Length: 223
Image (cartoon, rainbow, N blue to C red):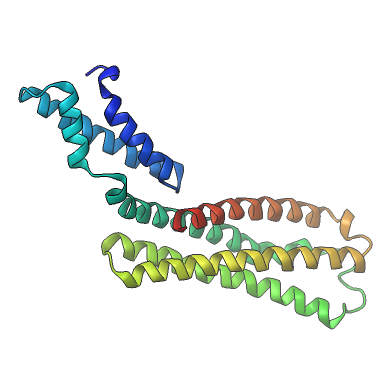
């Protein structure tokens, strides 16, 4: 069928695409699958003797309106967004837990006077934030896996709870990590020139940026 004859189908899919929020690849896959299904239905009606315009109208009507389709499609996109956020958090928090202390090891100030109690508490808090992020990311993947097998109201609540927790931990991590870095520079003159710390700062900054985008995507998908 020529593309010029698919106007009604394409308009219907454009309306759906404009109202859907979620991972681009998953969204594109849903729309592509829908388009193939719609065109197959149109072709079947045309082979039955129906005029092209009426065939498109009938196929679109039977496919469903945006109001009918959006809830289930958006729920699927929200699960995909949570999967992406959980996977990114698992990878980045895992690196943070394993490599966090390496930025300090062998530094010129590591054998000096003991830092203030508040500084040590903040440093410990950052470690606990990374650990919490790890646990929440694992929980997120488990919820996503359960959601793929069944559809229950409790799973939707669990998805929102885990996603909210991951987003909250991300905010805490950014605030606490930034405060720890600034305090470190204030306490140790050589901190800003210590290569492992500079490398760690760049990597953590990139990780936070990636996680922020993933969290924003999840928030939009569940809005």
